[in-house]
Image (tube, protein in one colour):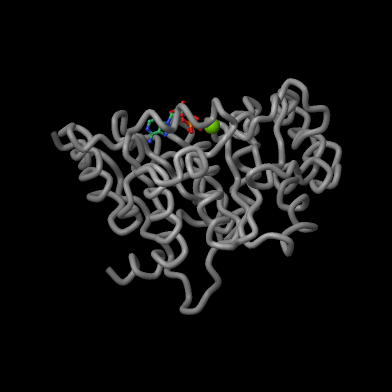
Length: 277
Ligand code: ADP
Ligand code: MG
């Protein structure tokens, strides 16, 4: 069916100037839940770390899944990204060193949108908070909640690039168009440099025709923005967080870990390659 024809053509990305620095702060966003934002933030972060980069992951979701996936309990955390964003606590004070450095979330963060909404500079709280540590890390990866609210907007304002995980099973192209529209507004008003760095098909099941169709539809609409790497569906991704580990350390030689290493390579040098494809 011609679903694709119903949709407005998304903006093609603005070409980055030759030799421009690769994004350093990357937001992982999709207003749909359960598409592997958190899984991708953590595992891509660990894959970068394996390559020798200094990596910080930031949990901006009040549900605290990223925090939990490193064996920390958000219910027992006293100071979190809430205090950083709302009370301007230096972010260094809430970074936990685990498999990877994590700026932690707690349930308090659920109140951040409301608390921020009346503050001047509410969209820039995260960008400000990151300035003191930008030089300490090569990559800062931002995990966002499943909405396009103020927390996600803070991530877009602080980010150089956005990676959009998309579940191959329940592809929502309309959701993606809405996300692109939000990013256009952010570019026009708050952060001219932010752009979609790539769209990542997740939970890909090669046995299902539907999964392949979903990838075809994505490619038809977003062309070179779709990563070549597709994250396959595997139970490993559900098992690892229970152990407080990334898949990279839970099953280092498995296919799931290999796929995130492929994605790391693609993010590191693939942006240019895909532009020239
Ligand atoms: P989001 O952050 O977008 O809500 P999550 O990363 O929390 O999504 O993933 C949602 C659920 O799907 C989690 O239980 C996670 O373990 C599982 N999951 C993530 N990636 C995969 C995958 N490639 N295959 C199977 N399950 C996955
Ligand atoms: Mg999540």
